[in-house]
Length: 205
Length: 384
Image 1 (spheres, rainbow over the protein chains, first blue to last red):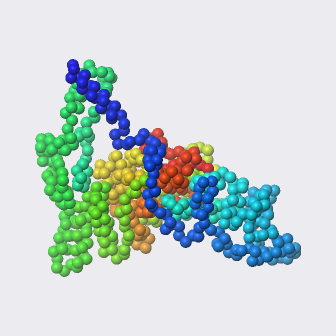
Image 2 (image 1 turned 120 degrees about the vertical axis):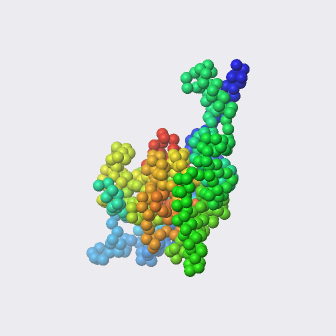
Image 3 (image 1 turned 90 degrees about the horizontal axis):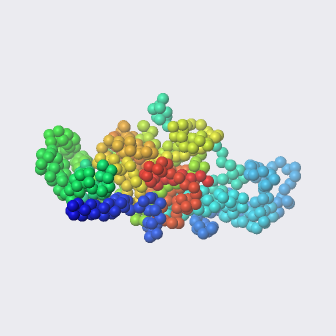
């Protein structure tokens, strides 16, 4: 009897030890991530080589620092003041048929909320304007968008909106608003998928 | 397991006795039905796997069972006792390689290149499981594969055997509100990973689903061809989710698939026997099988390869998404992430508290597919 009690006692202890998962140390992936990232050290992997030939500038917004593509050097005829050397009012001529920027059509919000002057400054075309009239550099045009599209701005800073460039490691680089959305027509048009699997179609007939 | 053992034995579960039983089958928690005594005797008599193997060899199975210990290379195959059928099978398989090797190496007319080819084939035929290889052995097999390609196709490929880095655990997030169903990811994946062009294999599937009805995979269309996004539909992609508790790994009888330290679930294509148990075990349709010889036009072959990733496969083996191991381990985004024009795909290091993937997990409403299975996929879905 004594032996039986001893053995069952030792089995209870065994069971108590075995209660902890035998292969995994953690009960869930979340717990594991939380625990293991406490002692996180940079693994020393860099994504710099994968940025390609994109010129970037570093920005810091809401505690997030990352790179975005530089804009001004990519604009075809920046600086705008090379043509716009007088205030816009003086350059506009009624009745003349040929107009510059004839191909730009504004299809963004409605005309009550927006027109060209909501963002552009007719007196200084080299910079854009905030709603309160403060100048905003073309390289930081995301600040213009962020005035209305606040939730998208929050997601973009964190990394949930907007496309990552190059790699997942440091330095972080992301597309800025105007790299995907045309600011004058920000809606993205529908298109055809790039592929169709004819084999799968045959198989399922 | 012995340090230099290069293969796995089928574990019948006889070596590891359960010692954690507290209640017996009769339902009583304390002793008294008689079976507890039996159990405890078994527990005290537990033997190690090695002892069991030896005992099995000597007594039960006679000369059919094989206890292989501390052997390497050709010894693994030849220096063992086996029954006639196994012997014939092994011999015919090896003879094909061997005959070629002997023929070319003994012949005075064959060139040095042919001899080298035969030598490589021989060594590849008898190499061990990648998972158990030392760093030198990994490099050796990679070098052989590169040389073999060079000899056969007269082209150079770059193949790596980069191991997982410490402090890295790969994770993926997919924004359902952003995906528009363009399928750029699918195309990029096929090209990056040298998938069979004949059978149009694709690791990624994009499912077109009706708005407001939740995920109904049986009603979804994953092979649409019309202008997208279609009115009243949303799109979501599936691929291998690199489960942290992968059911596919547990069922592999030869341990040809496993979970790496950085969370990637990978396959040794040279160790896979093509039984497709893993395909059946995967609850997410993440695995693909090569029913025919995979073919990729020479000019389209992606020559930046990894042993566990996009190197060229053969007929009769499994393959699947590896989060582009050849890219991700060097810090680059997987091909699908890079190709996605909408930014719906987010990839990163789950252990880095400042990574974008962590921000998504902590600030968006994320969920995973079939979470209740306990497979712990490292692939989250979220909406804006």
